[in-house]
Length: 397
Ligand SMILES: [Zn+2]
Image (cartoon, helix red, strand yellow):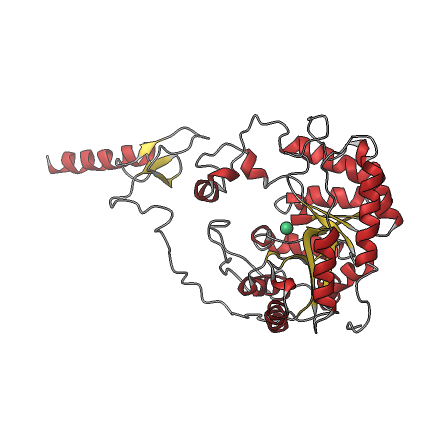
């Protein structure tokens, strides 16, 4: 009798374990299926819900137990040029310039390029303010192009004349051409002004003739064009800032904008373009590398995509080494406390540290450990080379 009971127990235990590893409490799924909402896969193809109520993604803040070396980098190793500056009114007064100087000195940013689309009187006033201050060799201004009236008779000639006047006043390049260009900017006839519209070619030709780099931001992060569901990496950001989500049937969509942008670069090979935010391809460096291979007039800038650089340290390291002559440092949003995260990613091989903006990245960053020669190119040499009007003396060899 006893013999029989034991055998029976063994059969009961063994049968469900074989069919449903993890015990009878789990919910099985088919290969390739995801667990139902509220559950997680505890053993292959077997899902379970936690016993306690799960915290929201806002409230789940696990403290890492990893013991790793920490190398904070408050100052860049070499003097940097921030090619993507938005100094928010600090250039207009001696006090503003003095506070900017103190912040940049702390970070070892030697030069700020203001990418605020300045032109005409506003540009003249800013240049006068800077050149009369101790910051006269440390701030330079990009000129803006006004696309208003594009396509109407005489528009291109007057836009070129305005650009020439802005350069005479001290502008060193063009930008930042904002993301509205290609999406919302309209031509004189009311139609959408496409990024590759040939009516703009006289402007790009003038930029080539005047040796002005064109700093251009096209489109938004690719995730913004994808469905706002729980598979979207930017769900939290789009929920915090609902205006950032872009309907997936919107025209032009991400790929259309990328095609038009690449046509612009291809059709104007004598013009130097700097694609802001790594062209929104920092999550796909293979694609960005193919663009750089194909288009020798193309450069790129790293502002506001550190979360993608720092989550692929080996691939990013190799990319920066391979394309070391084509990448410029830029920060975008002017938050002095955020620059040291860039220095740490570029200069160290630290593991698994926090990004500064959790809604951009719920993952950790890793240092990509760039060699000194590459750091110098990214921090200042490439910007100096493509922007002949920047002050060229006094930089490290
Ligand atoms: Zn910007």
